[in-house]
Length: 184
Image (cartoon, rainbow, N blue to C red):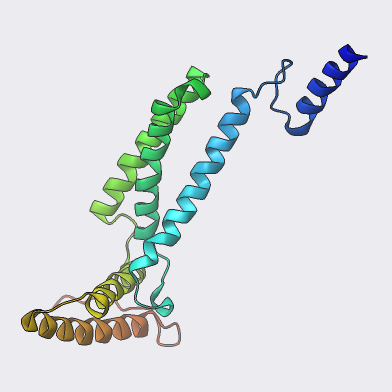
């Protein structure tokens, strides 16, 4: 009866997640699945958390630069996970592919940001609204004692808010698309 019990336990463990070996231990395939899930969830969290510096929810505007930044932060996580937790990930071919893809994402997102790849008129405006809103938040919340810096912050708040309103107006579909600059 005890042998049946051991067999039953192994069988139950094997059928629950499909990632358990005949000995009842987790296989690396399950680790890779959780690794991928961790990266997807981390990317989503980082994308959302990039808006922590925005002064109000109305200025949370999804944009390609936030995507690049979230990818830029997620890629090193993949590399570090494999480097530091390598014993969990024993498929050398999968590891090489993950390292290569993470490296490509890291370099691609770095240069995407630096070259502003894919940033047209609309993406520029969508990227600048949260950026300006961050300056407003800092001025409103920082404990500034210098009168000169307080005066600077008043100017920043006034100027950045006016620019945010202008950018939102340019993005308004009832107003039409931003018009390209004409050359004389």
